[in-house]
Image (cartoon, rainbow, N blue to C red; front, side, top):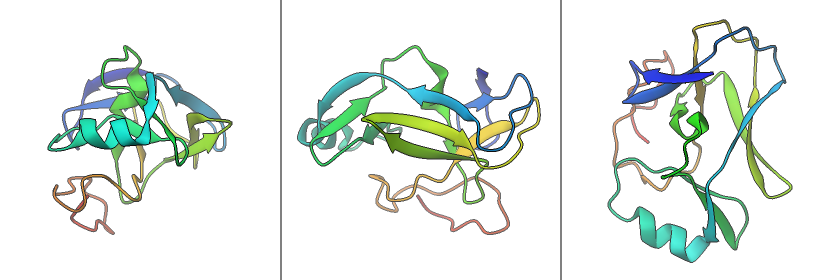
Length: 128
């Protein structure tokens, strides 16, 4: 996988080879912080690279060198974010072709509907 310019927003993550459905794609890594600190940090940010792992812990990937923090939102995603054993892991929802951008549905987001969704999916909600 590699990061590169995305038609959805800024940088995106792209498959270098075929990824079969249900395969673990990768893990979002970064600084482990409290949820209270995470919520403080994201106030007013347009790009949020924070995932809440539990009611008390979150991971802030803002300064992480890994590409997983660049997975963009889509209303019709090809990957899913799962919290497993305190880790934020991405899994393929379907077969993903080489060169295809990896996307996940952000679900409940700290953007609180402030940002326009640019995924381009037929079922796009229009907001994040």
